[in-house]
Figure 1 (cartoon, rainbow, N blue to C red):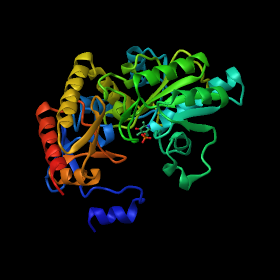
Figure 2: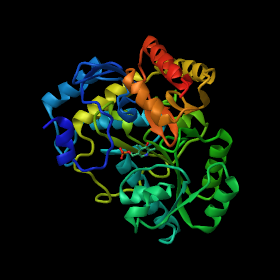
Figure 3: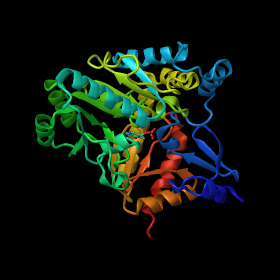
Figure 4: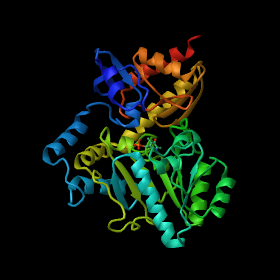
Length: 389
Ligand SMILES: *Cc1c(COP(=O)(O)O)cnc(C)c1O
């Protein structure tokens, strides 16, 4: 049996895959079983921040793997402490809880907010307000947080205590904060799965003001936008606000599974012994890999990310087959005249890998992609978008 048939026989049917058998990669290039090369503008959904088999990232992970692969949270380990210190120093947050995925990072944020509100205001203050069209994960609680009904239908009852309001409608949020006894407001600065849609500065600053005034924690979900993706270390840094809790994952490990929940001043001492935990959390190999990722996201590096972003925005804005360009940094959504699905499929055939987000084409290239490769891929995409059906 070939791989495709074996996959069909043995792997749960949750994914519809492209007809590519990924075998190896280097830099921004993915190579399939037949030796065909692709410029990968999806980065494993924003995970491979420095592309495939990056030398210093591999060295960091492998040298730790050969020393100590895991020991549990019963003991102290240096990579976890170093990574937590680095995250705090670079953000001003105070403490970190490590997990293994974006959904778990959000679960921790929600637990922290609920405990904070319960202790401060009483146990009827548990509701978390999120935005319509958001995406926060696939566990039953983060599905409840996700403001899109299509994800909910088959899995009710979901965790209670979540409501969603319309992004950019500040009156609706104000009213919800006043009437719903919320523990927290949780938002993505740029809705990723929802169609690569940034919040306006005015709206998010207003959200910060209202949550501050009402002592409601503001959680920023930086699972997709974090770790340099938007041209700042974290997307909230583009907005001139300071959140109470930040969750992140995807790009943090550069390709190894890690989630982190950063707790700010109000939240740093919410958890006591036994309140939360994760067997795999703070895995030393994942933490070493994440340190190598974070140490390379310097101001100079972020300037390069922004330059590449400006090139893509400029280039695609002038492209005849593209109606609009949205996003921030190297997180870009293209509204194409042709159906996104067709564009993505033809790009794959032409050697460029793309993602979708709702009815848009989504780009999340490796942050260190060569300018030349980026230009080449952009030209291929433009040609496909301009083609007459
Ligand atoms: C991907 C994503 C998640 C879920 O992350 P997993 O690692 O798949 O659990 C949560 N929030 C946002 C904004 C995401 O993009």
